[in-house]
Picture 1 (cartoon, rainbow, N blue to C red):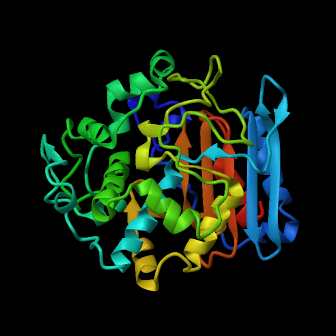
Picture 2: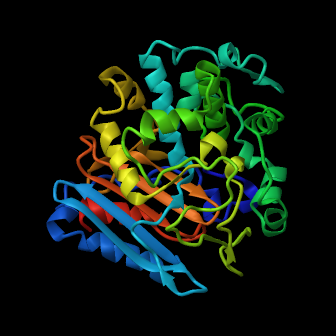
Length: 385
């Protein structure tokens, strides 16, 4: 879950859009793949992240040579335990790709249209302060062109859930999707629907609500039945209000501050309802590579829906990134294109990226939210440097 709020703008919790890559240098031409080098560049990149202050890192690659995993650093600082390739961790906004996949499956089944208005499925939910669900489509939710305010950018929300004093008082609060949307619509929209692009977690809270309105079942149940079980993603779950991580897992660490210095806190236990369908999911690196491989190879969506998912909108300020429907396209400095998503939530920062043919996939996690260069790991794997 991207949590853009000025209160925590200096921390990784404030990653500007939880994208698969920030503004990158112009492509410099193809470079040897990391597979040819035995993933050594990737291993060095995660070790460098630990030297730079990340407590621990875990990464898995799935390609034509099989499955490769590596870890570095500590999974539990107090106990001195290492990270594991099998760690379960909170994946944040990577949840969005799963939500978008379900909605596109429903479109393929003729149960909704991406051009349906939000108000058709959620009458009166998006209204007030210039917000109008009659003018916003489901497609605009999925590609972040709705203009709806990002509820995690609300100042009170930031103080309550992202800074130290508020977090330790409220980490176990149960929040509802309707309540999160209500926070957002107290703010005017950033722009008229379809006239701009701005990342907003509110879009995907609404997307989860649309899934329930269409199917009569929660987005979590639909993701479980349509994606998790068919792909045998045994380490993946939607915890709802469960505050603990399933084992095996590492501890998660945060500064819970406006700066990247100062004390480090264990933030492993929290109620992920604050993230809802924008970012509550738990998974493993192996499961994420399997999911994105299956998605890009057409095992989850018909060709038409996969094409819609990969129809992108430019990301302002980042000429090498574009946002589709819950899926981000990034051109790396070596010219390699990858599809995937980033995710950040308290104490956890993750990336999943896959080549367009789905045959080379990477997923990684840092158990910290204030430091660590995930882009360097992706570049190491896909560019070999």
